[in-house]
Amino acid sequence: MAALRERMPVAAPPRVAPPPEAHVPEEEGDEEAPVPVPPAGRRRDIPLPEPLEVPPQ
Image 1 (cartoon, rainbow, N blue to C red):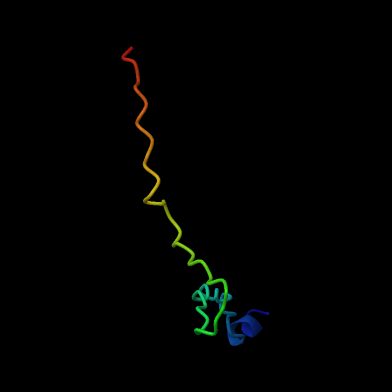
Image 2 (cartoon, rainbow, N blue to C red; image 1 turned 120 degrees about the vertical axis):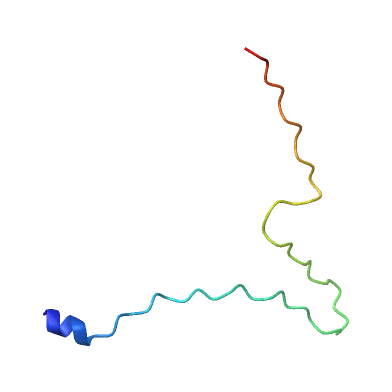
């Protein structure tokens, strides 16, 4: 069985396809333009909350 395992190629891990780019349709008189999706991560327009005051003990 070990000899058979040596001859068999190792299966490659499945490839994960990258996310498709947002499709922008050509100017065809579309009423609604697709809203661009912001990249993942923290939104810059939301300010961080103020740090909580920790009372000294």
